[in-house]
Length: 268
Length: 70
Image (cartoon, rainbow over all chains, first blue to last red; front, side):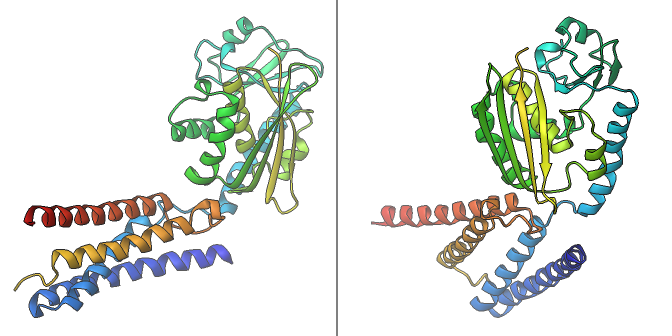
């Protein structure tokens, strides 16, 4: 209902722009002919506001349900694939030091529940493959890789050049104001029992359902890969801290208006 | 046949337009929770700033004229 109204509004605004520009041009031409100040003000006003409406109209419009429908199957397939291949370990986002190219980001899932992280030298062998199976685990490209690149582009520098404090200040602005991914983002840090650190992320009204229910149910691992938004935050955290990161918990409200994710940084 | 508005008229028009645009761009800022407006808010903010600067330029020109004529 709401989206139908938006489409009608966009059509109405386009017609309004055409009328304003035409009337404005006529009024401005009339002001020259009759040397009328009032006509000149009306003409200038109409042309200016018409041109402004034309300039500020949205670049593109996609229905939220359409994004949900398109992204949902790929996430479900990814979780199904991991389940089918019997990878039961935690999904760990690896920091740049594990790769020769610092731009590379991968998630490592161990075969067994208590499987530890392999050495960076082992990971580097499989760095250039989009999905690489090793004897002990699997390396995959995270779903939030493109979103994290977009965030870096909007930020104007790489996450690896920032730190956690910087990220806590800049990421909400990118989410709320620059890319309008969500209405609000809160990042809270908490020191863990050892040298690990816990980061709580609360995303209010994200622009789409980050992790569909089907994909969430399929995700058997104690720490999951997450949807594109949670995954992009995990990538940002692992690059900013330089430590491996796990998403230990994700929770979305019934109406999908709030999404909470808990991240844990590990000692490499 | 000549343009009926004087330099001062244009300056006044720019002042009124800049005020409206600046107030609007601040009120629809995502920090007020109005992210459901389907317009490019960044562009609106840019236009508001440009129009404000144009008004300030007209004021600067007027001041310069007063000083030089005195």
